[in-house]
Image 1 (tube, rainbow, N blue to C red):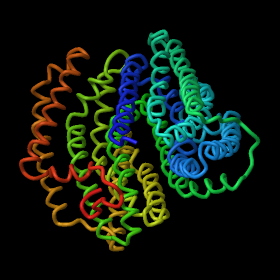
Image 2: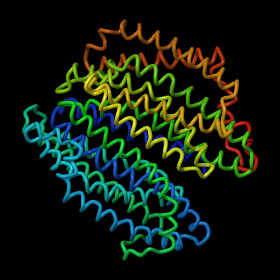
Image 3: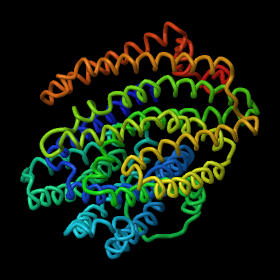
Image 4: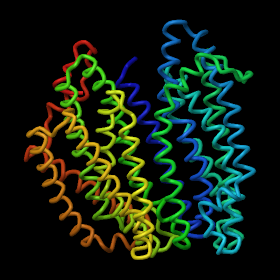
Length: 530
């Protein structure tokens, strides 16, 4: 397998989906604004995605792929196919049962989360209707996770990477065929079309991946469920990670619960702010966490604790190098960025200002979010899943209490504030525990490097603050002019930050060469890079 080609394929097609996602949001914000209908759709879109991450991705994929690959290597395609069918036979009825229960109990379940919607005539009922349309998406997208695992194990990355783009295409079509007006009836019809589009997007992704798997020579079928040794092995493997993922999903339900009581448009505004916050987190944090886990595991297996610590230190360095400019730039220029992307039509300047303020607070926790991804492999590699889960549960409990206390005083901004503070507490607790156990401490070179990166980021932030004021007329113009203004800010910020960091020693070229060098496992210098 050509590693560079594989990463290019996955990254390029993932970026296609991200661009389509932003296009979807830009169109949706102008048509729907921060309306009751958009809030109801956001609930309907959030819930199946929460359960998708719990059932279909993350823990399941991380357990299924190694087991499928092992059988493919030892028993060939027939053994791997048999394993997949055994898993599919249990997975499918589980998804059907979960979906059926929620379809029947949807009014009661939503009442626990968004009961405040009942204060607005028709809003709660619309949320229930839309969620009943979108929830079956869980079945198809979870099956896509299994099919994508098969394709990735066969080193056929393109289809699995492109499939998510079909959802955004379906939603864009749903928006474009909608009435487009601002009356309650027209907005309601628009979100109905979008809810149906979510289900259609799930079916399209499943059909594409099913076809690709069959073309790859793997014949899957829906058989009678049996608790075979293979199924038991997978369940044992994914259970701890599922519990860890469950903590995050519960936190998202509480996030929705609090937002539902903050008035019209609250969940919509929070959602748009989080989209931008999640972009660097998903690209940088997830990639780093995934990349360093096997390297740390190899070092620990060889009883090379110094090598494991050095790998984390270099990942720490890279995480800060890439997230600091994103944090400062998004925080300082949040309002014009949100305005350029979403303002227009039914999404007013007031909505953009609120969302921009949320984003400026939310991204202050971005370095911590990413560093948590860097530190948790230090626990997983040592087969300690419980500690990160316990910390996450404690942070969740504290966040719930904090939001109850702060919402009466700072309203919608409480959710962003508590989320950012919680991320830093999570990072600090993980860091302190690793340090106390002697597994990781910040070496002098890392402290010096991060300090220099902070200097470069601070200078960039000051320049961007004055630059956005200087370009003020651009940000009050057409959408095209506003996007040009954002391009000028991003370009100036990037050149300034990386230029200063390079000059003052915040970047080390040798680290980049070592980080991305492809070495054989037995030759990889664990004490020198990842």
